[in-house]
Amino acid sequence: MSDNAVACSNMSTANPPMPPEELDVFVRGLYYLAKVDGIDPREERLIVEFLRETQAGITFEDLQGSTFDPREAAVVLETSYLRRVFVRAAIALVKADGRFTDAERRAIGEIADAFGMSNAEFGELEQEASRARLE
Image 1: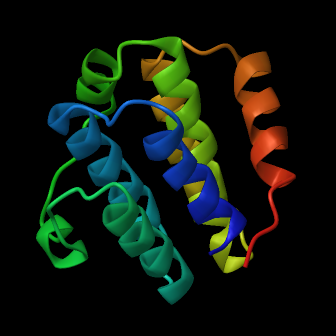
Image 2: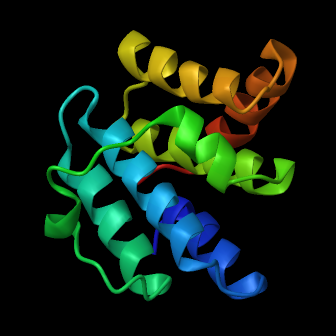
């Protein structure tokens, strides 16, 4: 399993399982971000691994046509811990294809803004995610 998938699965195994509403917005957000510049097979694989590891009960195909709203995510992922985990996982996911495009950075930045994160906090999370080995 890649470091990215490990980071995502550790979230589900190191802590009590996420409530369905949190898990739903989390995976819809990851899917939304993967779509920003076209879903790369490595991004798809990570999302599929995350769904399997968290026993989400939904498939990658179920996510097609789903919507994501950063404001909804801010309401559902109400703790700073969950928000930080999401942003870290999101950055690691979009970098899985070896690129971090301006469009991806903007999309994650909009989510970080909805979460009330400062530029400094976002930068810190970006650096943490960058240290993860991407495969």
